[in-house]
Figure 1 (tube, rainbow, N blue to C red):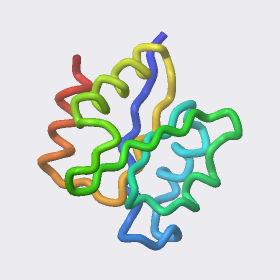
Figure 2: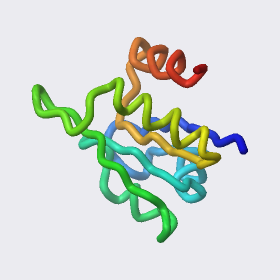
Figure 3: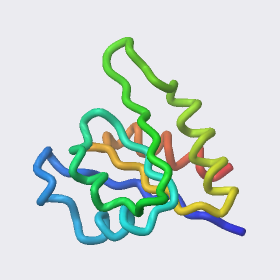
Figure 4: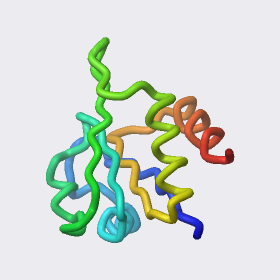
Length: 104
């Protein structure tokens, strides 16, 4: 059973600026991992049975370390889950770091 991890940029803050594909991924996800910058209204599109995981990081206040987030996403994908990672912005370096983790 192969899952899928979608990396979704939630736009510059206005929920109406997310792509149609991003919304579709949120709507079908079994698991949604989000940070503090993602607009809370995006989670309204989640299925009622979706697992919502807050993985926000602010300064030194981390709910999860980056390596823990990466392991979680790989684990959920290996369980056959559809995972939506919703972040307000993706920095190129961070995106490459995530992609390298998922190739495991």
